[in-house]
Amino acid sequence: DQQVKQNSPSLSVQEGRISILNCDYTNSMFDYFLWYKKYPAEGPTFLISISSIKDKNEDGRFTVFLNKSAKHLSLHIVPSQPGDSAVYFCAATITGTASKLTFGTGTRLQVTL
Amino acid sequence: DAGITQSPRHKVTETGTPVTLRCHQTENHRYMYWYRQDPGHGLRLIHYSYGVKDTDKGEVSDGYSVSRSKTEDFLLTLESATSSQTSVYFCAISSDRGLLGTDTQYFGPGTRLTVL
Image 1 (tube, rainbow over the protein chains, first blue to last red):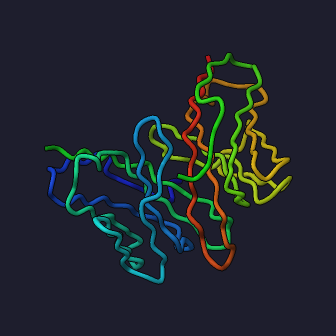
Image 2 (tube, chains in turn purple, red):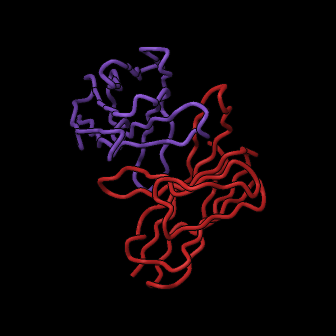
């Protein structure tokens, strides 16, 4: 049973516009969420995270929103750039469990010129 | 970038042969992890280690074993490789703070394993 879901396998956005990537989770014990970005033939790289005590975290062009009641989080990228084209993974964990991550299946973002 | 290397980066092997993948870190992090990435599944945890000689199973541990004899090295062994173990394998490290909070995991470059 997939506890972390990314229901959009792909997303195409024009350069300069906003990219919104979505993630849903089913395990209410999750209390820390992360987004990773992955280029082909490379390992995932950490992008941004959010604790369940917050509903928003911002880092430059990247903002993550958390809606605990809906068990939903989203990653906003503004403005989108061609270098943002990659696969984005949402991940979740429970504090105190050795940081073991449960990943979603990923969303491939393509930023077009 | 976190100092994590994986070897080999690519390997082709035959069904039934043993395979060992190595992860090496220079960050002195306590926690190390092995994940596999497959289409339609994202990344799934195979095994993890919370210290030298301390390991535990993850979500998809069947057919895999691990060992950690030194802080910097974490080995993943497929005792008898099967075609279903064809995948990309990623090692990750974390300093984790237990109940004080979750620390970010940093990933290695991956090993592409093909079992024929």
